Image (cartoon, rainbow, N blue to C red; front, side, top):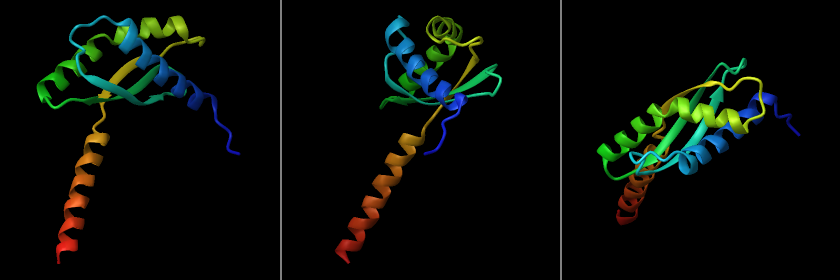
Length: 121
């Protein structure tokens, strides 16, 4: 069985807690779209963490507004995270838009189109 190191455990805990903070504790009216915290990559010294957010929306404008609101609340999120995480330091959070789910959906649609085209031949 593979050993899970401390950093991997903390990344998983950060991921879960950041989602809870954004969805339940922040009362930002600009966060209107459904989102998911896909991954958190904290540095070894826990000084910084990359937080990958996926936002599900049909409107690019609403998607952008929601992401910008999350980025603007980074300090509030870090403050709330410090309350629940039992670690000496809580990393500075840097948010990135993760469009891997969107890309996977487009690829799936493309593969289905190709597959249907082959069935007709």
